[in-house]
Length: 123
Image: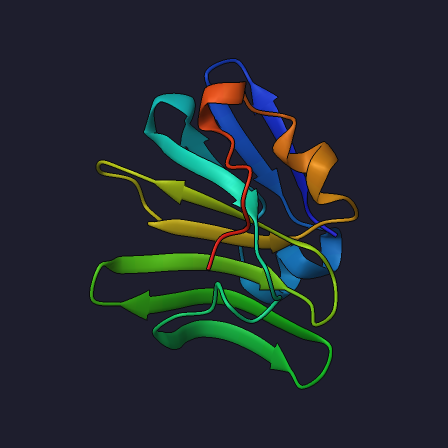
């Protein structure tokens, strides 16, 4: 499972080692000033949007990689039936949305200041 951390002024998403291999991303960094909202998804598949660009898809196990859509691209490391945290960004960032499966959404969302959290699930 991925981990969400705060490193100085950045939100850092660190995928598990095997997710790093599958996605080609060691970590994803977003300035905290560019984070619009963070919250859980109501269902694991809802944050998936657009078309898979550079991905590893293991049916029934994982959706990993970059999805492209009209608003840009998303980083996805989602596993069916696992809790998903969604980070929406604003401004000029590499990814418009980051969706990752985590062990506990409340702990992951609790990483950010209260004004960036969302009480209701995304999607």
